Image (cartoon, rainbow, N blue to C red; front, side, top):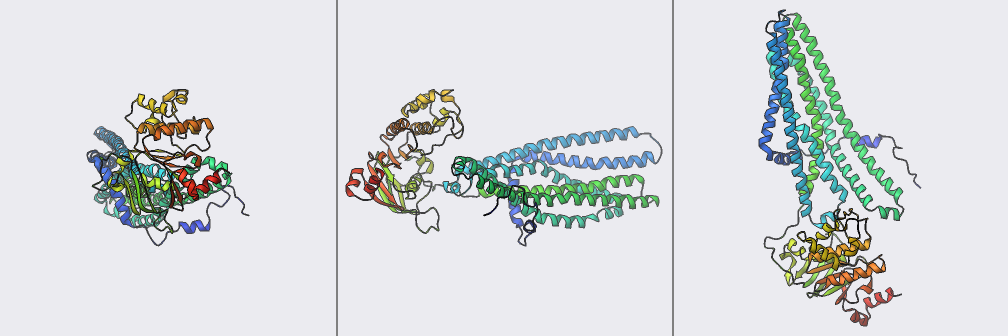
Length: 606
């Protein structure tokens, strides 16, 4: 039996960690980075005018930051060496003006760049959310919801952090570096050459670090997404966790994922932390060269003391942009890793209708399956539905019965066109479902699920979700018909009572009544009902049954029946078994046949 170790028991760094942190021979292709950066830039470029102003401010601030030290050096040669103060006040005023304008330019460039960054991230986040709304149900069925949430929050936040700081610093560093080298060459080519000795060392040091950080930052973002997914899943299913006493196992699983994030973050931050240390060493080395060699040159009269002062300051300005570029490179890598995960979602194919799909179809309620075959996965050994055929007339009530996994819910999924049949056809009033726009089809359907979902909004708005343009009187009328009005008016703020996402303020039966009211307000042609009276008290069950009977009047209804005594009044009962429709007919007819349904009914009464 394994012994559960407390969190933090294992050594922080293991040989396996070191092995995993080492760079693999297969590197991330640069084309992916370029494509991702290009897509981000396309969004940023939508604010071109403001971006140009920011760039002009960066040029001004970079030029002034170079001009200040140059004037200080000239003042030393002009006044200190000559031993006079005549005219110095003019130079001092010039320096004050330079640094005042420099401060203003830095303020405005940061202020405007923050606006650009926030607008860019806003567009990216809203585009991602809009894309979520267009993705098929199959996409969400295959992914953890918490991991998807991480892409809309953590990954986009990484892009936000980069745009807020990295863009200006990178551009400023390039300009400052270019200007610094030009002025240094003008003052002393020899000292410039000696100062630039550090570049090869810096290049190879940076290359050594970034070859490791690129992969590690991507692993860090993936680990964050996996951890968020597990947290969201565990919190949502906390009742199940406690019901099966799985707290210890869930804690162990959380610690495992948390350790994976810790390892990835540790190595990513450790390697990226080498950069400022390397740059500081090189900076001090460069300063030593300038001071030592410059002093010898000054003693020999080859340069002035003012030039040495300028050079010492420029030597720092020379390494500072290099340091900034190095530090921001890691931030950019993290942002690219996050952006790639966002764009992966945005590249997922959306639900699309054919160009000829009708948007003006008014359903009458006839539904048919014609030799339908369907599998959720392409490599399934056995289809979920196997050659299912039936026809339902407008206004009929159909009950779907059978064991779990028989295909009842799948039929509902195909009717709502959450999925498309692999073979055969689903038709409405004789028209293939693929010839009807999804929005047109679903606007004439309504769902009442076994586990109703309520939004964190008022009771009024939860019911109105069935038809957003409904008036308050229409909402209340729907609640009255659904037997929900009495308990709603007893709530603290009545119809304006705000419900939490899990609807903990009301009972399961009351949630179901609100769900029925929502469906009544939508006034659909076709109803898809997952029987919702399980584990509900008798009185509430009677209210729900009464509301459902009112809801189903004059509408084609498909009911998944978990208790056979609730389907006795159905016009037709479909008996599903292992994806096949094996029996169909009214209850009395199926009983007389003495087949599978008759056996199921007899067993349910025992």
